[in-house]
Image 1 (cartoon, rainbow, N blue to C red):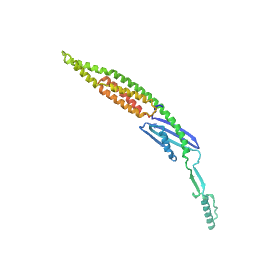
Image 2: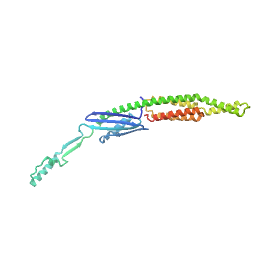
Image 3: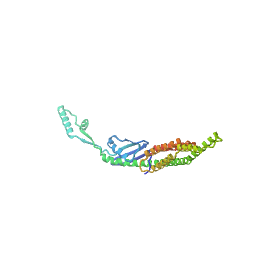
Image 4: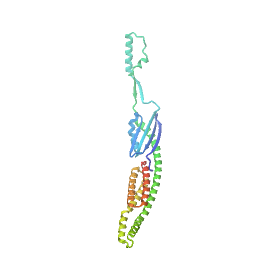
Amino acid sequence: MMIKSMTGYGRGEVEENNRKFVIELKSVNNRYLDVNIRLPKQLLALEDNIRKYISSKISRGKVDVFINQEKFADNDIKISLDEKVAQYYYNVFMQLKEKFNLSEEIGLSLFTKFSDIIIVEKNEEDYESIWETMKKALDQALSVFIDMRIREGLKLKQDILEKCNIISQKVDEIERRSPMVVEEYKEKIRERISEFLKDVEVDETRLLNEVAFFADKVNINEEIIRLKSHIEQLKNTLESEEAVGRKLDFLLQEMNRETNTIGSKANDLVISNLVIDIKSELEKIREQIQNIE
């Protein structure tokens, strides 16, 4: 399974049992799964089925679902005649005709004026059958939708890996530079002492103590080790078979934390510039991760 983008679009269309369903899905970034379904009023009873089915396939993103239905046979309405009521009306009309000696014929047009003679019944929807047809269209739409998310996810993955490699190179440069910071500090202290005390021999013990204190203060070995570990974890997470967006976001926070600590402890211009470069790449990764499921 590949990592997936949260941006996607899919369309499915199925025609059977005198019905045609056209379903469209589109999604954008969202912290959680938010499914918004628009479907014909007469099919609202199936909304829960649709929501559960989509939730079983997708874990994050704001997903809009558009469902349109066409019918090719009008099987939903049953029309019948209430013969008893019609007979009652006929008897009454005949009585009126005889009583008042009316010449007018009793015809069909007269009966049509009374709506209770014709019974119009709406057949119950066969929701199980409708759902089976709808689900086929939904499966088509989801297949296209998920494929698009995977393709977009692959692009995101490649881009993030490239940025991880850049960060790794910068961390290696910091690691090589770190011991030099202490040596340069030692020489700088020695030069300053010699400048102020030209004819006095430098107390090596005090000098070494001062350098040791500085070395301990600017030691960034642990931060470098942790940062390298986080980079590897991030790369491994990109190969995961689960939704990884939240985990990647957490790892990125940890990487930022270690990078900031390195920048504050190093006390070196070269390392500070490398830290700025790393933070720039981390920000680019953060923007990409916001779009990963």
